[in-house]
Length: 144
Image (cartoon, rainbow, N blue to C red; front, side):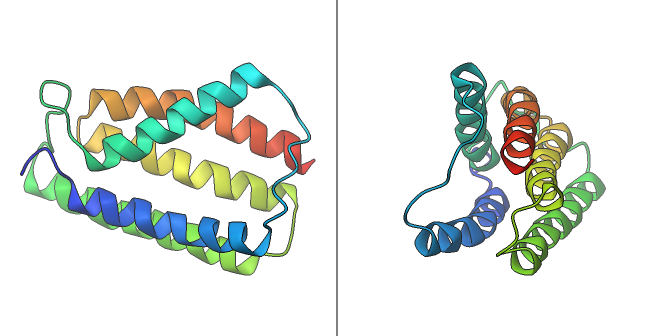
């Protein structure tokens, strides 16, 4: 099952947990102070493509890890990034500041970019290049 990345699925599921809890606690929605429809569209396309390509490896666009050691580095680094992400969510849950916004946007951006590089997934790498700058700027603009 080279096309399916179970660890990618686990990483995505874990980073979604605090987001789902936040959504449940704030049903009234998130106030988007910076309305830039083009950047928002790029972010959403990048986000959902990153989610998908973390889990599904499309043949011909995914070349796998260089070695078993690279795979282990991928697993350890991604697990650390996901843990840091969750800790920051827990510590900063009720705060709305620039640190939280940047941390919670940079960490998944690095996760997707690193995963794309380590797994040699062209689609994940390209998706992360769409997602990262747009997600970071939207998060920053809404926090300041």
